[in-house]
Image (cartoon, rainbow, N blue to C red; front, side):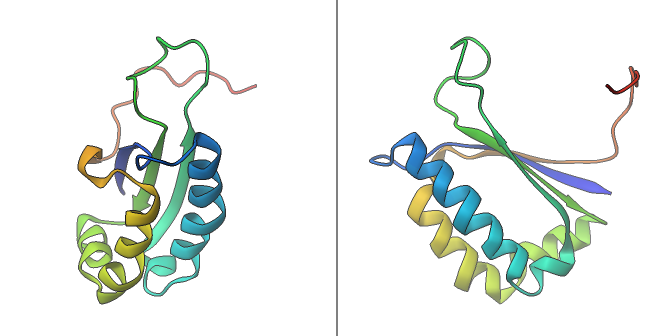
Length: 118
Protein backbone atom coordinates (compact mmCIF):
# COMPACT_ATOMS: atom_id res chain seq x y z
CA UNK A 1 0.00 0.00 0.00
CA UNK A 2 1.25 3.48 -0.89
CA UNK A 3 -0.32 6.81 0.02
CA UNK A 4 -0.37 10.21 -1.61
CA UNK A 5 -0.29 12.86 1.12
CA UNK A 6 -1.00 16.35 -0.19
CA UNK A 7 -1.31 19.74 1.52
CA UNK A 8 -4.01 21.82 -0.15
CA UNK A 9 -4.42 25.57 -0.45
CA UNK A 10 -7.53 27.21 -1.83
CA UNK A 11 -7.46 29.27 -4.97
CA UNK A 12 -7.29 33.04 -4.50
CA UNK A 13 -10.75 34.58 -4.35
CA UNK A 14 -12.45 31.59 -2.73
CA UNK A 15 -13.71 31.77 0.82
CA UNK A 16 -12.88 28.90 3.12
CA UNK A 17 -16.54 27.82 3.05
CA UNK A 18 -16.57 27.84 -0.77
CA UNK A 19 -13.35 25.81 -0.83
CA UNK A 20 -14.64 23.16 1.58
CA UNK A 21 -18.01 22.99 -0.18
CA UNK A 22 -16.35 22.31 -3.53
CA UNK A 23 -13.75 19.91 -2.15
CA UNK A 24 -16.26 17.81 -0.16
CA UNK A 25 -19.37 18.04 -2.37
CA UNK A 26 -17.90 18.19 -5.88
CA UNK A 27 -14.28 17.03 -6.05
CA UNK A 28 -14.44 14.00 -3.75
CA UNK A 29 -17.61 12.62 -5.37
CA UNK A 30 -16.08 13.30 -8.81
CA UNK A 31 -13.09 11.08 -8.01
CA UNK A 32 -15.34 8.43 -6.44
CA UNK A 33 -17.60 8.25 -9.49
CA UNK A 34 -15.05 8.41 -12.32
CA UNK A 35 -13.48 5.31 -13.84
CA UNK A 36 -10.73 4.26 -13.45
CA UNK A 37 -10.30 6.24 -10.21
CA UNK A 38 -13.02 4.52 -8.25
CA UNK A 39 -11.06 1.31 -8.85
CA UNK A 40 -7.47 2.58 -8.49
CA UNK A 41 -8.02 4.69 -5.36
CA UNK A 42 -8.60 2.38 -2.40
CA UNK A 43 -9.33 5.16 0.08
CA UNK A 44 -9.71 8.92 -0.31
CA UNK A 45 -9.48 11.01 2.86
CA UNK A 46 -10.23 14.72 3.20
CA UNK A 47 -8.90 16.42 6.34
CA UNK A 48 -9.97 19.99 7.22
CA UNK A 49 -7.51 22.20 9.00
CA UNK A 50 -8.42 23.01 12.59
CA UNK A 51 -9.43 26.67 12.71
CA UNK A 52 -7.77 27.31 16.07
CA UNK A 53 -5.13 27.79 17.27
CA UNK A 54 -3.32 29.48 14.39
CA UNK A 55 0.00 27.84 15.32
CA UNK A 56 -1.44 24.31 14.82
CA UNK A 57 0.09 23.82 11.38
CA UNK A 58 1.67 25.55 8.42
CA UNK A 59 -0.16 28.78 7.71
CA UNK A 60 -1.87 29.17 4.36
CA UNK A 61 -2.91 25.55 3.91
CA UNK A 62 -6.56 24.63 4.23
CA UNK A 63 -6.52 20.86 4.34
CA UNK A 64 -4.80 17.59 3.59
CA UNK A 65 -5.87 14.78 1.31
CA UNK A 66 -4.59 11.25 1.75
CA UNK A 67 -5.20 8.87 -1.12
CA UNK A 68 -4.44 5.17 -0.76
CA UNK A 69 -3.29 2.94 -3.63
CA UNK A 70 -2.33 -0.73 -3.74
CA UNK A 71 0.95 0.15 -5.49
CA UNK A 72 2.97 2.96 -7.00
CA UNK A 73 1.93 1.59 -10.40
CA UNK A 74 -1.72 2.23 -9.45
CA UNK A 75 -0.83 5.83 -8.49
CA UNK A 76 0.89 6.23 -11.87
CA UNK A 77 -2.19 4.78 -13.56
CA UNK A 78 -4.29 7.36 -11.72
CA UNK A 79 -2.28 10.39 -12.88
CA UNK A 80 -1.63 9.00 -16.38
CA UNK A 81 -5.25 8.09 -17.12
CA UNK A 82 -6.82 10.33 -19.78
CA UNK A 83 -9.70 10.98 -17.37
CA UNK A 84 -7.26 12.65 -14.97
CA UNK A 85 -6.38 15.33 -17.53
CA UNK A 86 -9.93 15.55 -18.89
CA UNK A 87 -11.97 15.50 -15.66
CA UNK A 88 -9.87 15.91 -12.50
CA UNK A 89 -7.33 18.57 -13.53
CA UNK A 90 -9.98 21.03 -14.80
CA UNK A 91 -11.89 20.60 -11.54
CA UNK A 92 -8.73 21.12 -9.47
CA UNK A 93 -8.13 24.38 -11.33
CA UNK A 94 -11.47 25.75 -10.09
CA UNK A 95 -10.73 25.50 -6.36
CA UNK A 96 -7.04 24.72 -5.70
CA UNK A 97 -3.91 26.84 -5.82
CA UNK A 98 -2.10 24.10 -7.73
CA UNK A 99 1.24 25.95 -7.62
CA UNK A 100 1.15 25.74 -3.81
CA UNK A 101 0.48 22.00 -3.54
CA UNK A 102 2.94 20.11 -1.36
CA UNK A 103 2.79 16.35 -1.79
CA UNK A 104 4.61 13.09 -1.25
CA UNK A 105 4.06 9.42 -2.02
CA UNK A 106 4.71 7.34 1.09
CA UNK A 107 5.13 3.66 1.74
CA UNK A 108 3.84 1.61 4.64
CA UNK A 109 4.54 3.38 7.92
CA UNK A 110 7.00 2.48 10.62
CA UNK A 111 4.71 2.34 13.67
CA UNK A 112 6.28 3.59 16.89
CA UNK A 113 3.12 3.85 19.00
CA UNK A 114 -0.05 1.89 18.35
CA UNK A 115 -2.08 2.61 21.46
CA UNK A 116 -5.68 1.72 22.19
CA UNK A 117 -8.42 3.56 20.34
CA UNK A 118 -11.28 5.19 22.21
